[in-house]
Amino acid sequence: MAKPSTFIRIPKDRIGALIGPEGKTKKYIEEKLSVELQIESDAGGVTITLGEKAEDPSLLFKAKDVVTAIGRGFSPEHAFRLIRNEDLMLDIIDLRAIFGRSESDIRRVKGRIIGMEGKTRKIIEELTDTNICVYGHTVSIIGDIEQVQAAREAIQMLINGSPHNIVYRFLHRKRRELKKRTLELWEKPFKE
Image (cartoon, rainbow, N blue to C red; front, side, top):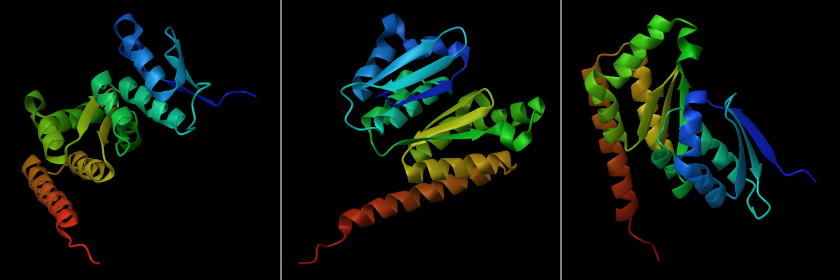
């Protein structure tokens, strides 16, 4: 019986990051997720096959997310957060789907999202507890579902042309809501 597998293509300039120094990144992914990675360095193709010892077929999807995250510009350390924390997810906004092939619009919006010296991206990351990577024609986010939702909403506001100060205010309000919700979970009395 054939082992379950999936195929994805990542940019050729990200293959080195996926393999890592002396193949350590590739080995780490294979060991932690019980998968086998076959990498076509010349084309950027990656075949992910579920290993013999894998008990959970969902590991194939987790491995695909980790490889995709590295392919979308995340450092392996940030991508590995997806392995270490079950609650985290990868979300990708494709700017080509919004602007078509208009390179000038994509470049302008990427500049708005990154901000001067990376300031805007850092603020979004800090206020939503996410990791954000702007690479090629995509904006990728790693975080839990509520964090990713808040970050995506802020990025969407920037894409739609909202002023940065409005986006920052939105993020501060969202952060307070998330903290309040977390506190409420801990403060609810137990009923016997």
